[in-house]
Length: 110
Image 1 (cartoon, rainbow, N blue to C red):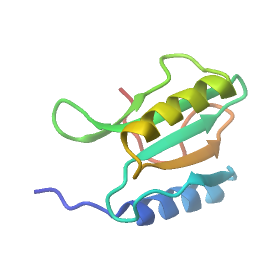
Image 2 (image 1 turned 120 degrees about the horizontal axis):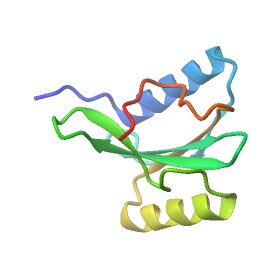
Image 3 (image 1 turned 135 degrees about the horizontal axis):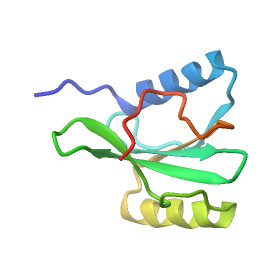
C-alpha cells in the first residue's frame, strides 16, 4: 500500500515550490484537507489548462489535461472546474501562473 500525503500538505508544498521558482500560485477553492483531489489551473501566455489528478496504467500518480490538449479561455476553464466540483465537492482548485505551461510540481501528464 502506497503512503499518501494529505492534500493540504501537498498543496502547501506545491505553492511553496512555485514561489521558489518565481511563479505565483493561489488556492482558488479549499477542499478536504486530508483526502480531497486537486485541480491545477495553469495560466499560460496563450490561455489556461486545467490538470486533474488521476492514475497511470501502472497505478502511479499522474495528471490528465481535463480541458483537452490545447489551451482554453477563462470561461472554458471555469466550466470544467464547475462540472468537476458538482461531482466532487471535496476538490481543491489551485492556480499557478506558468508562462511556459509547465507545472511547478513534479508531474506525469497523460
